[in-house]
Picture 1 (tube, rainbow, N blue to C red):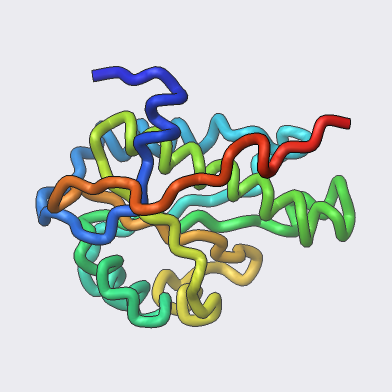
Picture 2: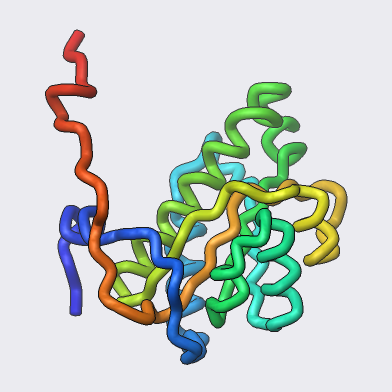
Length: 174
């Protein structure tokens, strides 16, 4: 089933209840393929993706994420990490503190949208202790965790609970 991009964008919701069914490797690879095609400053691609299927690691990540236990219940978690110095080599402090975060955020959004199109549920988790996440995954010092994305088949039908502000409320033509 394919959806046009606006359908996918509007269908995407945060899922916090997952079925235990594993996500097939083919779908995982499609999510990662979507991630690497994200826009990024200077085509520097300052990202690394940690694909976590081990239950003990998912539990550790849930604890690091302020005990958001739904992370452990997902059969798969992708941790999106930035490589600040990779961006800094070309852009200095702006690359180190901004561009690498924007770039990895774009990659995370691509994962969310691709997952939605593939019938998977996700949730972007940004509330976590970076040092604890680093410990869970034994991350090298040069990487900074930016997003934790639990992935799986939704346990139940999810619907958008909130309305969006209208374009007229948030857009300013200059």
